[in-house]
Image (cartoon, rainbow, N blue to C red; front, top):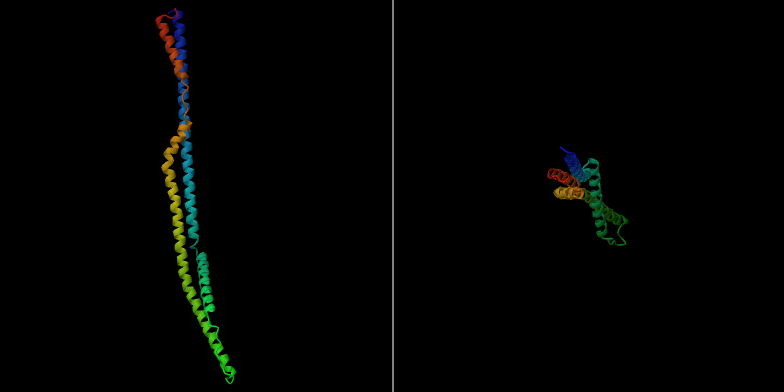
Length: 209
């Protein structure tokens, strides 16, 4: 076999080998970029879901803080004081400013007795208001607890909705990140292999003789 055939065949082998290596490298790089893109998208979603979980846990923890013995006692006292004060204020503002007429001949003791009676009646009314305030305070505490639970449940539900939406959009975000990482092959490997085939063909046809 003459050199006019050997050299083209060697060139063909070299070009084909180089083209194969280049194509393999580009394919490997493409796989690596795709893997990194999928990893990045997955990591982003994991971080989002962890954030949602933490937000839900914080809402739950804050809600449960309302039900510690100390907080319940403080809430009960606050509700009782508020309602008792409202009852007493209403009682005092509606108390008749009345001084019974006493003739000049009536003993002073009579007026004092009437004043004492009115004072005692007011004191009894305030005591009744205090007892009623405690009852209404208990009702207010239960209402406050119910509202707190409802608010907490609503907050957790909202966080869960955001979490579900994020999870449902994950495949779309994954595809978008993969597309952004995609790089069109250069085609140089195919060109080199084609050149190698051309040399082999030319050697067989005697082009280099």
